[in-house]
Length: 188
Ligand code: HEC
Ligand code: HEC
Image 1 (spheres, rainbow, N blue to C red):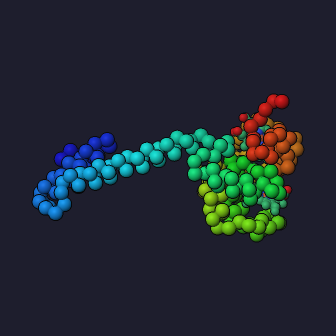
Image 2: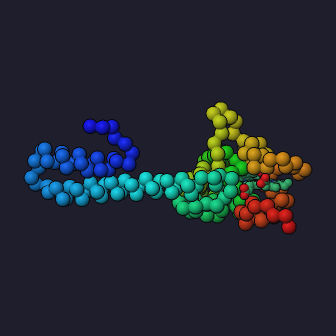
Image 3: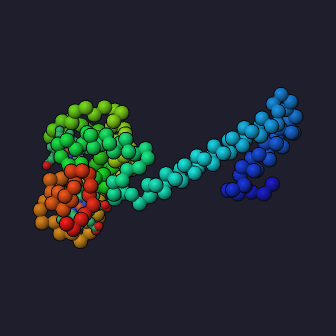
């Protein structure tokens, strides 16, 4: 028997199925039924694989911007609802995933204030969104607490000289629609 190769897997599987059931001479289950099951299995498998690939292409390259797609839209909406009442909505990409994790896990101790109304369910959905649109730190790299300590923020601002302190209060100086979660830069 030659080694299996990617695209031929399903045909091979069907063939083997036929051979298996012929050799065992199973009488109770009819061959057409078995074939139908195998074809169903193969198409579900193929469908799953194509879903996974779509997912990859949809999310590839979106780390720096905040166009949430697919399953992440709910998480983004919850994020905006829960995290932009006291300050502007902060784009996930400017902080590492680990910082978002710390924040979400400690709503009772949020930079000296308390965030109410975060239940487990919203926490998980917000985490899925924030994690998807941020990057991880290297192993043993310290977790920045503030945007001003985050190398990811500076990676998004190459060659920009900041004349005012980098905090959520000053984003608006250059991103005049930051309140609407729009961080594109226009020259108006
Ligand atoms: C009850 C008001 C309140 C809510 C709600 C709130 N924050 Fe904050 N947040 C603050 C305060 C106060 C600070 C500290 C601001 C400062 O030091 O200028 C802060 C700071 C931050 C910072 C650091 C900003 C910087 O300039 O470096 C991040 C990141 C942050 N919040 C994320 C979140 C997230 C995520 C949520 C939702 C889970 C959230 N906040 C909800 C009040 C709030
Ligand atoms: C001095 C002006 C200035 C300030 C202040 C500033 N930014 Fe920016 N930001 C820019 C410019 C210019 C770009 C585009 C950079 C590029 O494309 O090379 C940018 C890009 C970004 C991007 C990427 C946008 C995208 O669509 O890819 C994000 C996210 C962002 N900034 C977030 C922030 C946040 C959050 C703050 C506040 C903590 C902030 N910026 C403060 C000027 C600024």
